[in-house]
Image (cartoon, rainbow, N blue to C red; front, side):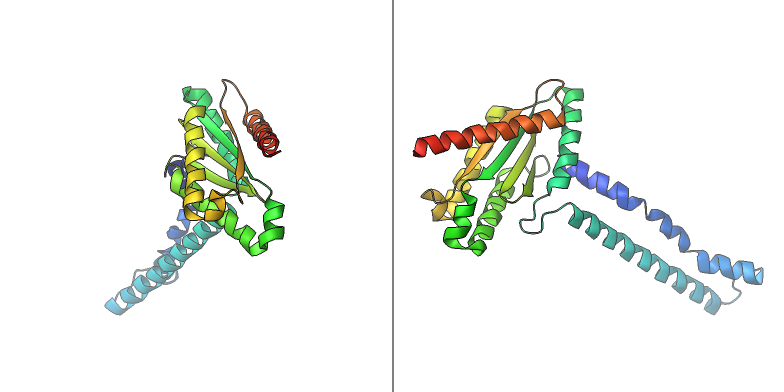
Length: 231
C-alpha cells in the first residue's frame, strides 16, 4: 500500500484534475463583457457579476468534495472501514516498486479468520460481522498511522502492508493485534475466535504477485499447523 500520505497525495492529484472548473468563475463577467463590449458600469452590475462568480465557485467546491467522497468510497470496505482489495492491489505494486528502488524492507501479512463459517453458524451472521469489525479495529489501533496499511480483501481475509518493516517486526505487529482482540472481547481470549497469518518480507527483485502469493501460502501453512496442534 502506498503510505497514507502518498495515498492522500494521489487522491488530491485526481481530485485536483477538477480544479480547472474554477476557470468558470469569471465566466459571467466575461460573458457580460462580450455581450456589451464593456465591463459593468455600476456598483450594482459589479455586485451581480461577483455574486454569480461566487455561486459558481461554491458549486465547483461541492463537485470536488463529492468527487473526493466517491474516490474514498470506491477504495474502502463498507463493513470494516479498511481499504479494499482494489486499493490493496494498487498499493502492493507501489510499495514493491518503492522497495526495489530504495532497498528498504517491506513486510506483508496475509490474514484469514479461523473457522469463520463456524462463527457465523454458532453465533449468527451479526456476530460474524462484529468479529470482522473488531479485527479491523485491532488493525487500526496497532499499525503505524500514516505509514502502514490495513485492508479487507473480502470475506474473512485481510492483509497488512508494512513499509520499512522486517518480518520480525511484522510478527510483533501480529502479536499485538491478537492481544488487542483478546483484551477487547473475551471470546478471542478463550480461543472461540482466532486467525492465521502468513508473514513474509520482500525479496530483491520480487514482483507484487510473487510477494502476495508467498504470503498467502505462508498463511495456509500456519493454518494447517494450528489445526494439527488442536488435533
